[in-house]
Image 1 (cartoon, rainbow, N blue to C red):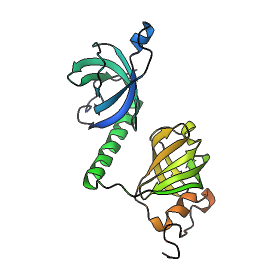
Image 2: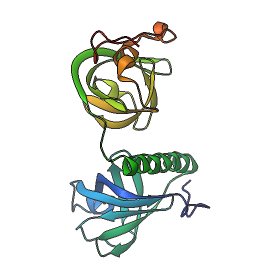
Image 3: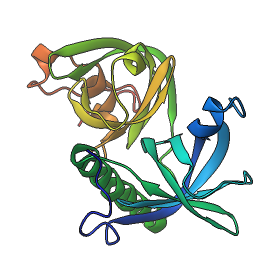
Image 4: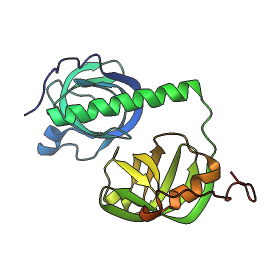
Length: 223
């Protein structure tokens, strides 16, 4: 059962731009547009989604979309606005709780970026092996690049892990923030030290409780 106009829905809101693609299922059933259309999200709450798009829509049309770092959303077109349209979301209680957590995460990340606009430098270490742990699941991957706040992992993890899934890469806690067919991007739950980062990322489950110092970034320097 979907939730319409949940209590507090307007208070939980993220205003920001995210890339996405959407479909209008009613038109597909009528044999019209069958292609997903690119768009940009302008804002999202637990009840409404503002979409920037040149596509002309009609209130009441069904809407389905997937947005980067937000995942799939569905609902009905509520009204048209100058830059696009607004969708009334149709989500159940479980989806509402998940969306609420994601919105809060997006707001916190946006605040961090606003106070520190320079992204952490990335180090290209393509080919270094690592293991992603999600509960009892173990996925072998290879590191593409890392920074103190995240990493790109090449492998089959995208086929197993959902967007925003909480995982451990070695002994480092992280959240999946990007998914592509052959790789995932993760954001660490807290900033990491470059001295120990590579060893921490490559740690096996049985070594997670042990400490180690990596000299990958600073050869010959000890902690």
